[in-house]
Amino acid sequence: MTSTVIDIGQPPIRRHSALLRSLRGSLKGSEYTWALAFLVPYIAVFFTFVVYPALYGLWLGSEPSLYTELYSDPIYQSTIVNTLLFLGVGVNLKMFGALLLSGFFMRPGWWVKGLLMIFVLPWAVPALPEFISIHWMLNGEWGLLNNVFYDLFNVDGPSWLNEHWLALGSAIYSHIWKWMPFWTIILLAGRMSIPTEIRDAAKVDGATGIRSFIYISFPLLANLYLICTLLSTIFTLGDFNSVTFVTGGGPANSTHVLATLGIRDAFELAQPRLGVAAVMSALPVMIPLVIILMRKLKTAEVQL
Image 1: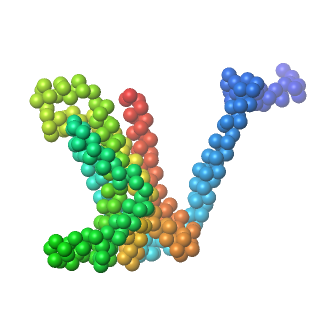
Image 2: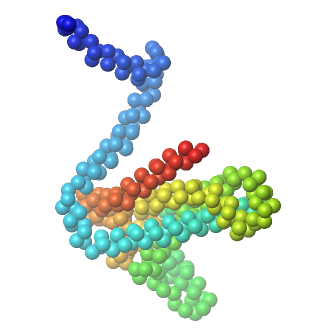
């Protein structure tokens, strides 16, 4: 069987036309033009502000010598410990407290709703004035907290921001105080979505109080609680506000987490590549969390 030049050139043309038809779908003429007009800006913004910064950051932190320099730095070693403590203590206390408080705010009464509005204020107010207020409240010489100790008990309070563990604990507390209301609202919405028929049936069977929480509320909220915990861990890993504005990384750079150490190296030490490498060293923790989160969300979608 002989083939002509025209026959040989047809398959690429057909494939090209099939691709265009699949992209067009059922759109024709001006509809296709308007679709492109709306789609192209979004694609441009996505590549400009998402793809390019991510690739540029990977390129900045791609030199192996940067990580050798990081691992030999004692400040970086203490930063790893601080980050793990910040995640372990901050996320678990925050989420467990949010779970318990979501049950409290399920109680009827106008005063409960009023308390909920007040409770949400720390999350609703911008972070900068809040953390700066906490910083000055914990000042060892003229801070509000130590003045209260002296006026009530005639004792001098500790130097909250001049000791490593007290300063790190203050930063963790500030983070919990700021973000616990948000997760409480999420879990409260999850509790409110539980059908009342299930609660009424549980009451008839004698499952009230703590038994209702163990056998009814928590099993139904377990999937939501796990997803919120994964999201909170990812958000907390990138949080730098509470450490930056409460402790400033002090005393003597002993309360840095990876996010604030990256800012210090990039801007204060004028070593942007080292700062990016410090932040990218969190990827071995971040990537598995994202993968688990995506799989959990996929499983939840199938269950729904």
